[in-house]
View (tube, rainbow, N blue to C red):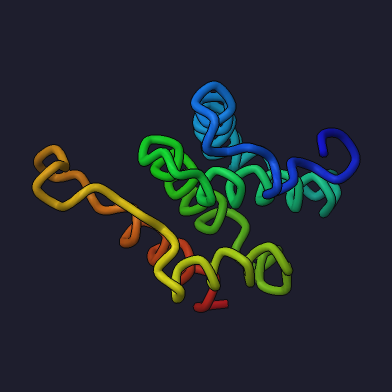
Length: 130
C-alpha cells in the first residue's frame, strides 16, 4: 500500500529488490530526520516515515533491518515527543520484545559496529525518556 497509507508491513519485504529499496529509504529517512522536526511538517509525514522504518525492521534481510534500526534511532533522537503515542512505535516495541528483530552474530559485525537490537533499544530508550 503505497501513497496515502505509507508502506504496509504486508509488503513482500523478504524479496531482495524490495528489501534493498526499504534499506535505502530507511537511510534517507534517517538522514532527513532533523528536517522532519519543523513545525510545518504534518504528523502524517512523521508517521509515514516511521512506517517505512517499521517495514524495514520487519525484513528478513539483515542490511535492511540495520537501515531501519539506524533510521529509527535518528528519528527518535530528533522527534521523540512526536513518536510517544504512535501506534507504529508500539509495533516496533513489540518486534523488539518478541525477539523478531534478527541480526547476525556479534562476531559477524565489523569492529565497533553495534547490533541491530542495541540500535533499536537506543531509539526506544530515547522515546521512553519523554
